[in-house]
Length: 295
Length: 231
Image (tube, rainbow over all chains, first blue to last red; front, side, top):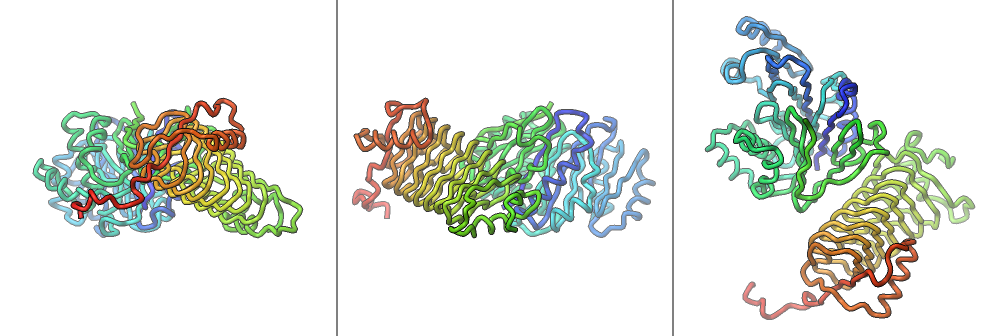
């Protein structure tokens, strides 16, 4: 089943409430996905010279990590939330990620970019949003997922959102049937995958197309031919997010839009707590049509 | 529970509200009820068996009014997947839009949708009348067995695919017709039925002349010997 949610705030004054609204959305979607949950928050406020790396510690002691990393890299700040850490530094991805992979093997990279922060964990979504203190996050837009596992094991690796490129992420409700073939093709093109999950392949596919300078709209339109299976996607970048349902449209989605925000979710339930939602323009995204919001 | 004013999701749970509405005694003089703040909850008003009238103020989730018998349900908002699924009798009126599979497998009664519905409206319906003032999505009327659909707007791809004896009256255009679904000639019986449905739906903008009739060509009813080589 799985539940997916997305929230794009059009007005700056609402940015500080992003986490609060999103935690309600994920909480309401616990029934669709009780196995694990995750979310990506986009905040463009920080200086452009920094990169943010979201890491899952996987039993590594954060104090050990901090001590070593702070000696190695200058101009570094570390934020510790539950079993995740967000490292903010000027060090480039190529250098930093290979250093982490080499020196801290148990630690997994959840995502990185100039504005994205990603968190995911196994367990009940209502508990997970509390552990990560999602209510306190601010930003311009966010994407979240509650998972009912079908394609791969209930692990952090198998949880959404999947981030396979700078400031990119994807959540998915559905299942893909040609992901093994597609994974092999993308590996040939140089993409790396951490799990056997179908959604990670779709995320890799989108990243690959975006790196070829294709727009999100074009990428997702092409995915209609290249991806075989059932899906409702929400794909995020630092500019905003896009929504796509496959042409058979078995997987639900509903959109509520008004002057303040755009909310997307698997079910209306997820957005029932949002302000003025009943007065918003509420509609279902049409099958096979790409919807985008952002700058 | 007992008190009518507590049919409010801010004060009560779905289970309690449903339980209350499902157990109204036929001797009860109070026959009209209002549900507040449904907030997209699922299966609201499912399994009602008495001829009561329920007004729901807000958007509802999946399977609203499912298995309904006799009750009149009015939704002042949108409805999720499977509205009036397997309904037996009574009436459901949605003032907004309805999601996919509205009226699926429903045996009787009437559903009126003021807005649009998405895919698979009336899938496998077995005798219900569905009136849609807007448009319907793809695969509507799929394997529909009996009953009538009246659609004022357009229809998505593959309208009436593998349809049995349901009759579809469409004022707009179908994007495409499904397998074995064809346009048919409107007869006197059809005129009467369309007039009745327009009256029930309180539709004045459309007249009988606007509608085309679609139904089964009945080519799939029996095995075609020419296809033997496929097996």
